[in-house]
Image 1 (cartoon, rainbow, N blue to C red):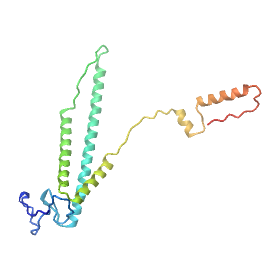
Image 2: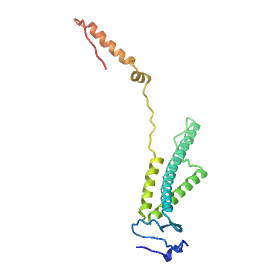
Image 3: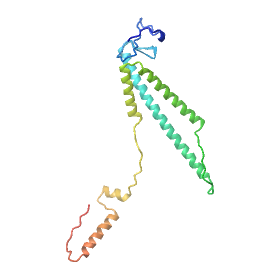
Image 4: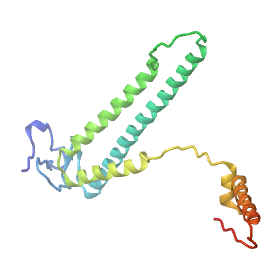
Length: 206
C-alpha cells in the first residue's frame, strides 16, 4: 500500500528530480525514497539511509541516557533533602516534640526536573513517530539503540559495607589464626594432655 504525493503530507516530492516519498502503513523494507517525519528527511541513497539508521540508534541511546540522568538527578535531590532534614533535627531543642515537616526542592531544581522530563518525553515521542512508519530497518535500529542504551547507561550496581574484622582477613591471607581459634585449640590440647592414659593424641583442625 504505497502513497506518493499524498495530499495530507504537503510537498512530499521534496524536489528531488520528481522522486516521490514511499510511505506505507504496513510493514516494509523501503530504503531509497523512504521519508520520515518530513519531506526534508527524504532518503535518496543507501548511504543516506545507513546514516539515518545510525542516527536513530544514537537517538534511542540518548533517550536512555536522559532517563538515567533523570533518575540520578532525583537521587541527588533526595540526598540534599535528607541533609536538610538532618540539619533541622540538629537545630531542635532537646525538649521539642515530634512533628512533621514538608521539605521541597528549590524552584530552580524543580525547573531543571521539568526541563529534563520534557526533553525526555519529546525525544520518546519522536522515536514513537519513527516507529509508526513501519520500516523494518528503522524499527530494528530502535531496538538496537534501546539495547545499547540500556547496557551503557543503566549498568546495575549496589554498594555494600563489608564488616570483616582484621583477624578474619589475616587468617584468610596467611597461616595465622585468630586468637579465639587458637584459644580453643590450646584448650583441646590441654584436655588431651590431662586425660588419664592418653600418651599420644593428634588433634586436627581446619
